Length: 126
Image (cartoon, rainbow, N blue to C red):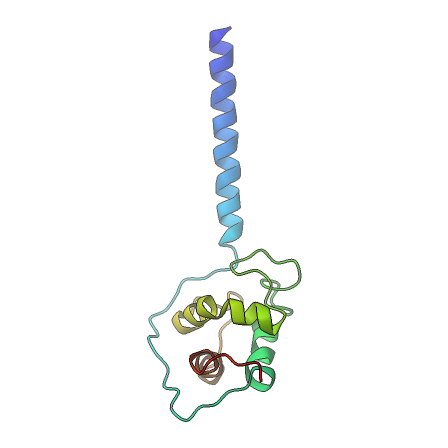
């Protein structure tokens, strides 16, 4: 009896470990390795959320990428509204600055500058 219970416990531990590993894999599935970009010069660069930043976020991160759209649990989750983007601005800044995001493509230097400078200048809803 004791051997059977021990075998059942080992099986449950193995299954739990496999499920945990799968969850970690899913969590990181929308992430790529980062490059070494270190900073952006925002001198004289005023950016608008509505005109400059939101179109980039929607096209590269949310609605067209499948990573941060409706119902997303990847990283900061959904990035569909100003509030969601604003609340995730620190993570977004780091991911964009290092090149870790977007997972399914790259941003141009101008796009990176728009996002980072908007955040660095207060991330206003303008």
